[in-house]
Image 1 (cartoon, rainbow, N blue to C red):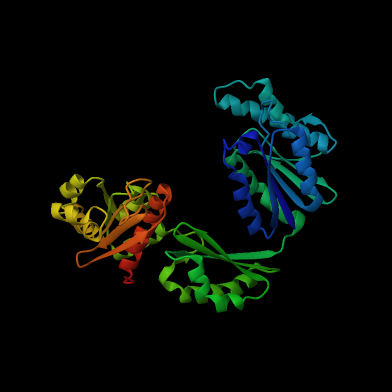
Image 2: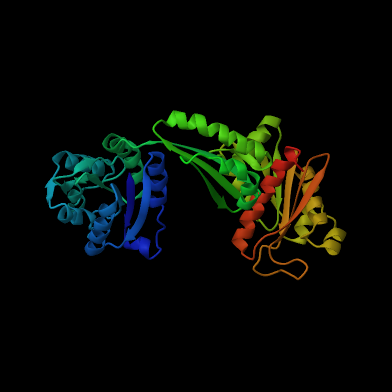
Length: 414
């Protein structure tokens, strides 16, 4: 089964809004055992929309469309669908009652534009919108299906999850599919590929391995395609276990676990707390940690020490250390990490200091030079990294690698 995803809206084409709908839909479609063949973003113009429909229905079985269903004049998708499928709008009295009640519950009177949301193409199946006023529409033509959904992400997602997913399963009986994601941290895809080359070469044709890298991380996705999802899982899980055994030093978990979640579990298992001393990251590590619900159980706080004076005053970094070695040095981050243990009631401390850029670099310490350290009461481990020339990337990489250094420290890998 081939799927085409079409997002409609001038705002997408001028970059005013980032198209997250097609990315989310692609993931959902894949879990159904369907294959996304193409994605298109088109303007709020009838000719452009019709051309996209023609192309998509020409070589795909299912077309998923989002956007252009609002009550304003620039939303023309519904009228274009009427022309395309040779039908006309009809009033759905029950929908109109629901819309009137919807606006009344919000202390507003429904206007004529909003009443038009109860007018839908006669030959479509109506897909209820539980979170807004624009209803979804299901069209069938020559054994193919076009589904039109709102462009508002939370409305579209709710509609797709229930009932569209089930409707697609019943209409197309997609094949079985199973995915197992292996999350790794701290090493690149080429390192991993070398480590597991023989495992990858031995995969049967119906099981594929994909490398999905991001800053400091690589997700390995094993995907199996067949008739029975449970049988696929029984074949894929032992392969995943073999891969994990081979790269255990960089493995943090399966599927959607994050490094921050992994660290949280590790700290709770040990009954320990941590804190952070940040310079070039400016609180980014603290933000990452506290993005996890319940992080207050193991995270005490952060000290952002951007200047020499604050490093000395709050963390007890020696003035002589800063003068002799500078803020971006092994000696300074080691003293920052040790000082944090006195500053906060924690068992583990992370310290980071570097040159994020774009200015401030020297021949000896170019932009992207970052020192980091982790400490407990018994020892301190420090690492130097040379990242990029891009400030945002350097901050994100420093955050990931600092958290990973603590992971390795706690597991005795460094």
